[in-house]
Structure formats: structure tokens, C-alpha cells
Length: 115
Image 1 (cartoon, rainbow, N blue to C red):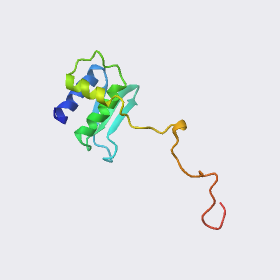
Image 2: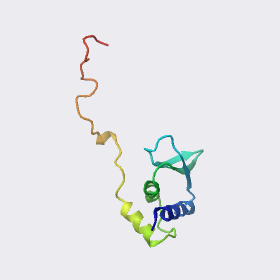
Image 3: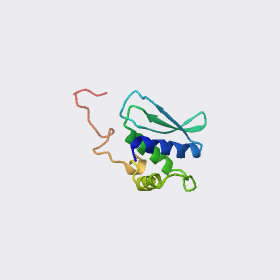
Image 4: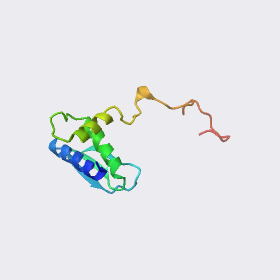
């Protein structure tokens, strides 16, 4: 299935869940989008400057967090969502700190004077 058709089907699944999907250009092409709340309503914002594959991945990640068992969709879409189920991007949490080094508290000033 082509990304354009696949993205359209995922948008239809989101509409069946009463989830609004908006595609608009962001200032940067780095962020593909994500789920947010606007005026109390859940909205998925997708960056139109990113490739359709990336937008489909973002939408799949959002849909996997919801109950989609009873939503009608093609077998290809259901299989794709199942494959994407465990592949979320890691987030930094207090218990999952990956910083290295002594931290700001223990560092010494580089240049002779103090603060």
C-alpha cells in the first residue's frame, strides 16, 4: 500500500475514534508531529513538511495508545499498527537519566573567576 493511501486510512481510523487530525507546515521539518490538547479536545498535529511515511508513523503511534480493536480497517493497516506497537521512541524520565559527567553542581569554572 502506498504511504498516501495508508495515511488516509489511518486518518479515517482516527476520525472513527473522534480524534481530529490536522496537517499543517511547522517552522521546522525536524518534528513530524504528535498528539496534543487544544481547547480540551485531543488533536493530532502532523507536519506537512515531513514525508508521508513519517506522518503515518506518528499517527500509528498515537492510535496504538488508544482502543482500536473495534474500529474497522484493512488487514494491512491492522498489521502495521501491530508491528508498531512496541516501537515507541524512548523518552527521558527521572528514573531513566542517561546524562554523563559530574553535573552542574560539581563542575568548576573554566575561567579564573567565580560567578
